[in-house]
Length: 241
Image: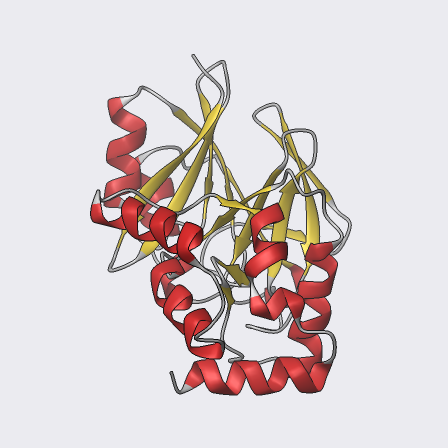
């Protein structure tokens, strides 16, 4: 079996990610619904080894209990420590710097508040995978539901320190909308290559995820914000776009 990360579309524009090991074990990230993920695992005869949760929003956790019940009730579920006491299922709590080792993978936990206070990302350093939840999107970033602009700005600055070759598995297909927002910031900027790639993929029904962190560093205006005031202005403009 080939080691890979698979995208399972759910809801309107969410992705659940399934990291598959060579021996047929699976790590599922942010299962907002169970049925599609359960069917994916069964069709490929995969064993659910663990579930990784980036934050507590329903479109990321809504399917956890059912997925466990219908696949492997003994699979471990890793959730941000700040959210202890929130869950109806058994959990393992994680925080900044923790290492989650499961199915032959090693995920380093990054605490990245802003979208929510509890938000974490999971970085598989040796493979160059980052499961960013709702912190970073294609050409965008998450809304501030609980955190402050300073928190989100700092979280994004941390991501710019990761290697350019990192592939970012963000949980929503927002790239095309964010591309239109990027265009609105500067009508004269040459975005033709970017527009051709993003719109071409979407016309063919292909995802824009995973993202190239190198390209995000180049084009994403939120990663490029040099201070909190600049980030705040951008985020407010995007909220009303």
